[in-house]
Amino acid sequence: MDITKDIRPLTEFKRDTAAFTRRLRETQQPAILTVNGKASLVVMDAKAWQDMQNRLEYKDAVDGIRAGLNQIADQQGEDADRFFETLANRRK
Image (cartoon, rainbow, N blue to C red; front, top):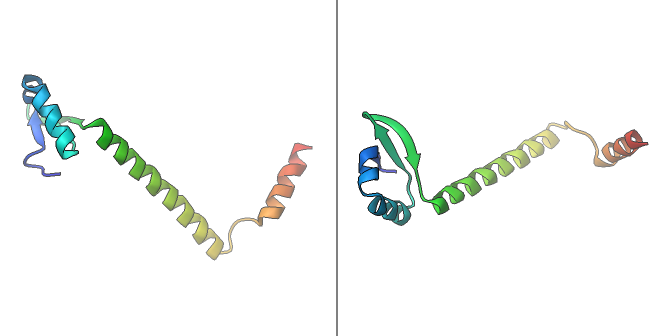
């Protein structure tokens, strides 16, 4: 994100929404809209937003797997067979 190009006043967005939207789609970069000179909103293309969400979900999954692998390395946790046996016994 180029901070000098992607911070715009809300009035610019209102004045030429079509051009603004076109630029968002082309660049796939969010834009920060200001009100009275202060950052107020972030707008972005829906595809770019979905791509960002997918990356965040992937990162969360990788972090979870990494945490599990670290627990195994530290000999934390419980043997799977024992876990499922305990779970089955609780349901009885």
